Image 1 (cartoon, rainbow, N blue to C red):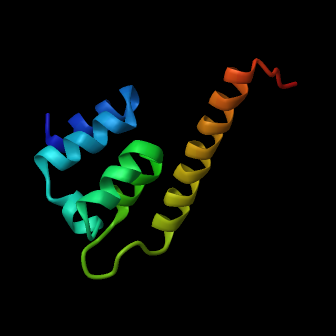
Image 2: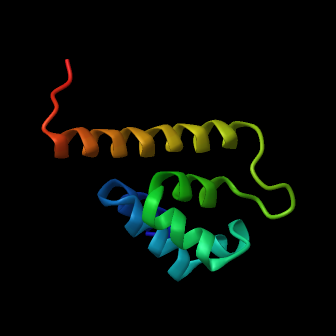
Length: 95
């Protein structure tokens, strides 16, 4: 099983785990983010977006084409997760 398969399986468990494995076993995080802190803040607050950005980022061009769709979709998933957690904490029910 290659590193890519391990990271794909880890993303089903947790996007933060997948980002950690990308950071640990590859250079993608340092290529995708200009500073460690941007990657860390993404890992902390927007894990799906950070994971998508690191996966679709290519060194000379950055994120292009269909990659933007994946990053935006991951951002929507992150925001939905935060909104759902806030509603759950307040005890609000949605229809």
